Figure 1 (cartoon, protein in one colour):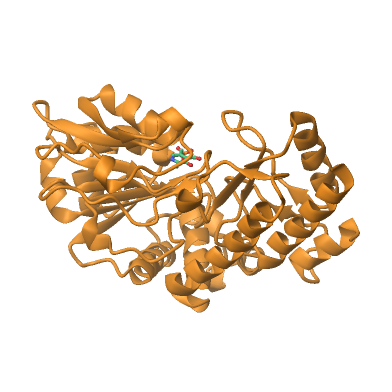
Figure 2: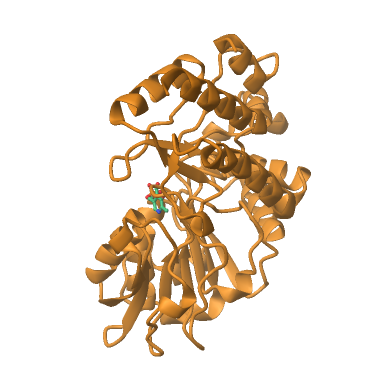
Length: 377
Ligand SMILES: Cc1ncc(COP(=O)(O)O)c(C=O)c1O
């Protein structure tokens, strides 16, 4: 297949030159959303200005933030006793905000280590309080999600932290770990946020950056059960203080207005396309196609994740040699498939196929994989 056919397949008529973007984040956005942004860029709904130029205290922006929150609430079916916060600082700042708000001086928090990001969350947590490892898959280079029976949970933990999808290693929790009675579950859901339905009532806190599944970089969503806000100590700096930020409805200072607007459009698109149940089906169909190609390659392609722990968001695999991996990435890029190089701790290839990644892009990759294997056996 020629490179042009890949490129046209991705884009429709009026955006020629776009590639299949396998980037781990910031990542592909729905084309319909980009087109709407383009259309509304100079004059948003008759306001005579761009959202880029608009006060965060204006009525038009208030509508945008309220609608975006309503969309997220609807998609996740978020119970009324949870707050949705629109923050900045990325998931990385949440590695600090979670313990400074929720971990009292005399208490300890549990962390499950399933990859680099949960290790970083743990290390950052340690700077703010007492933390312990409740489970880890480090011994096999994070190729799996620990079983519930392997977890050593502290019944008095301030919270149990886990990472629902491990962006670098390509593993994902099929279902969340079960925390002990009274121990809130805290989840870094940066790389699978809004990719499947969740029972939010099982969680104390969920947080994630918007830039993979939900919108552009610059916005972090925090969903927090209201009773946990009582734990926030009174002397925290304002920008770290969940209780204050929640009382001010995310408008204590200037929020990332344009990222909130774009996330609003992506969440509209998710609702129009069947909500999270349909989104999850599309995501497993895409990932299934790719894993099938790996499994049918007679060992030419080797998946990093153990099958039961495979991620529907980031598919990681190796080729027989590093030289072949280099050639694979180079040739794929030349054919309009961008961002396939794996992260250095795993090596090989990583195909990130978040919500907005089109099915035909996975089909194109699978065809390319077959041709590459035939040419390089
Ligand atoms: C699972 C996970 N957690 C945290 C982060 C860090 O997020 P941010 O760059 O928004 O701070 C990432 C980024 O890729 C991630 O994939």
